[in-house]
Image 1 (cartoon, helix red, strand yellow):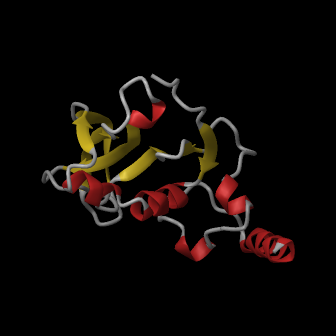
Image 2 (spheres, rainbow, N blue to C red):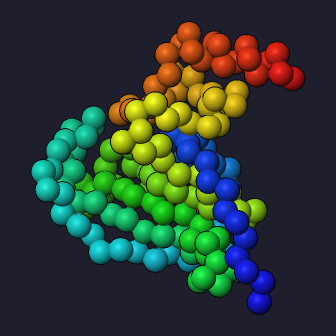
Length: 161
């Protein structure tokens, strides 16, 4: 058996991870049986809080989407790790969607969060020119480049092409 490939890690903002999760059709592939869910136990929040819709968020859910095309020692076996908030009524709260925490593509690229202990770290995709505008950022997004920075990145990307 060939050794697992070297994984290329890219620090990304949550908006890019959501876009990649959607572009790779992760949920559709899971529904078709091409990916398999592996759910962690539901955990109560230490301090429940209301989301922007007024739902009280009381629990956290976490799961992995597994790609059985790759054996478990292969880092591509875990295609994605996702999180979601669970409201007191049992529904998914906050955005109502899965929040991808990491995504590993079959080609060996792992998109992972910007570490909170690295305040100067940036989203590699935004900085390469595919910047998400401030108006399309998530409600509670912590990575928020200002409009002037966005314009500078866009201009730099146009000049490179």
